[in-house]
Image (cartoon, rainbow, N blue to C red; front, side, top):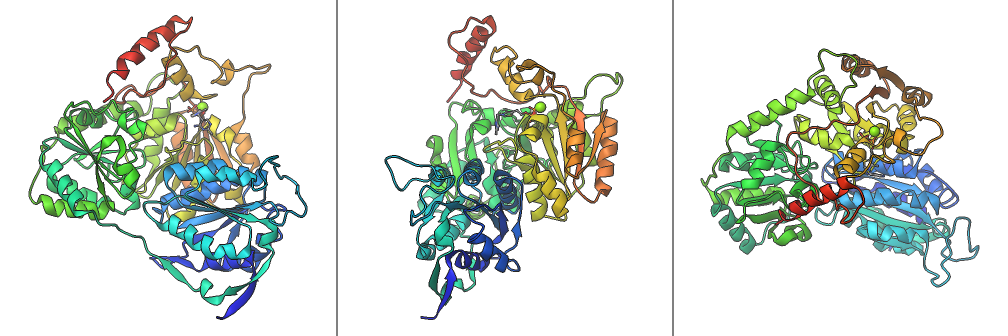
Amino acid sequence: MKTVRLTAAQAATRYIAAQMNEEDEPFIAGMWAIFGHGNVAGLGEALYAARDTLPTWRGHNEQGMAHAAIAYAKQLGRRRAMAVTSSIGPGATNMVTAAALAHVNRLPVLFMPGDVFANRGPDPVLQQVEDFGDGTVSVNDCFRPVSRYFDRISRPEHLLTALPRAFRVMTDPAECGPVTLAFCQDVQAEAYDWPESFFEERIWRRRRPHPDEVELAAAVEAIRASSRPVIVAGGGVHYAGACEALKAFAEKHAIPIVETQAGKSALPWDHPLNLGPVGVTGAASANAVCAEADLVFGVGTRFQDFTTGSWALFKNPSRKLLALNVQPYDGYKHDAQPLVADARVGLDLLSKALGGWTAQAPDPAFKANWFAAADAVTQAPSGDGNALPSDMQVIGAVQRAAREDTVVMCAAGTMPGELHKLWKAGRPGSYHMEYGYSCMGYEIAGGMGIKMAEPARDVIVMVGDGSYMMMNSELATAVMMGIKITVVITDNRGYGCINRLQMSTGGAEFNNLLDHAQHANPSRIDFVGHATSMGATARKAGSIAELEGALAEAREADGPFVVVIDTDPYPSTEAGGHWWDVAVPETSNREEVRAARKRYEAMLKERN
Ligand SMILES: Cc1ncc(C[n+]2csc(CCOP(=O)(O)OP(=O)(O)O)c2C)c(N)n1
Ligand SMILES: [Mg+2]
């Protein structure tokens, strides 16, 4: 056997660079790195040598770098991914939240945190957590529950099995998610005689599993037996590249479609069979169709509580649940009838078997009424110029500025719900919402990852003041790397959406808006000054008209462009939507809480 002598870190970078996707692109586009003693000498040396085949990028926060990596993979429909390396200790644990985000959203990312010395010579090394009763524990064990594959590389040759497993998991449609290879820092630097064949180029083909014949026949039967089916389109439709197949299926069989946060943009917003967003943040049109449906047909959805209205949305007492999913775990959720398969293959085969069968098409008035309601709240304000604009009016302005190739993105706060309801998404991929983990701080770093994935598209990041404050440092990375994104900060001076949730559950306004939090001095953050200090171009918009002007200016800018607008923290879109299960206290000395509890108990009875 021909061998080559390399350190474990050199071998890892060489192997990673040789792994290709079906489109013949490197599956891992590059590695984000913040170095420390746990990776600078080992992986750092290897990455420098490999810089022409595996680029290294430096961020400002390990979590932020990982958010960029995850957004990149999401935007490319999991066809490519990025790696992220950190030192041991704090750098590593900074990535744990991002790992959870990738895990919930089923997105591939390769984490390579440094780890303590495998030989234990210097124990405890700087930043080592000491477990008094277990010599095998390090902080990287925190990654176990948030990784789809976890391994600790405590001998060089572990890579021979760990790396292929890592790529298998990241490229497997059913198991896809984050992978953690905790890399002991002494091992990174250790040499080994590697078989040369280990570094041969390899193509990771995406499997498209066909359904089991019996399950397929049963699914056909269930659809034929229904008269008012509805399709719930989830993120899996995008990841399977099944948007066209879904459209063809819906058109041929006259079945309405509703979209989850991850599924949105599967069909263009104005397609007659796209009844709009579903669930808690859904449209009245979509939710009305779901309430009546006798068959709820989920395609590539996890049936998260926002989608199902905490399982109180599908009200027809005789309704059935059918779940087409590549992952059996999702296929069986809530007692669904499973159809385990790739979404595209599954839809094509179902369609063939259904022949000319069609459902009862929905009343077109549903959809027309919804968009009339949505347009009313997003139009530019007229008259009294003193009132603060609403977030919905901000959405209207951004929508008017958006083009065919614009991607609007967000993750947490008021905007995800409002965008789900109100944004008119065009082609697939024009709407990028991280609403699996809804992680504050995903936005700016994520926007950068989207732009790296699709440099030709305009990326508009919608971010609240709260999320901006939680994590904004990758704005400086975007400036440094010349990655042009537009960031719209809606400054309502606090956690507006949680304040409203607190009020709706009977609570006093407390600890959410800055003015309601413990303070000696009122907090007035200068976001324009802050963004400017990091090198971005920043503007304050005093009105919706000024926002439109700033967005036009943003288009001509060469680098990151930030627009700040003060908005009213109280309004949200009344139309549409559905109840969401947030437990209200059973006893309270607040009358408002006791009233909210009564409403809550009544709604619990709606669950089915
Ligand atoms: C990391 C993280 N911490 C806490 C939360 C809970 N949370 C969801 S939205 C929100 C407030 C968001 O405030 P802001 O970004 O200003 O948006 P707004 O609702 O005011 O528009 C909080 C605290 C979260 N989703 N993520
Ligand atoms: Mg806010």
